[in-house]
Length: 87
Image (tube, rainbow, N blue to C red):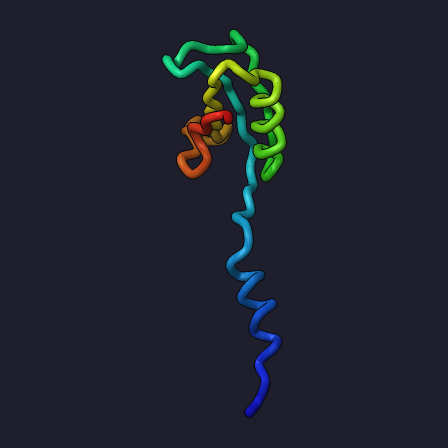
């Protein structure tokens, strides 16, 4: 019987993490939709949205923040990642 050990790494690569590309704006808001940072937001490129999102959550710890992520090219909210509720 022929061994197919090469297929496991290929399957892992194909089912890997979602690769993000583009430029994004992140905004923090409270549970009722009010801005927690005024007109201040963060910008991120590609998968940097995760680092920026986690940094915003850490800075707003205990405020039950919700982070919204917008694609700067389209102006639309990134539905696959937003809104994100901080823990």
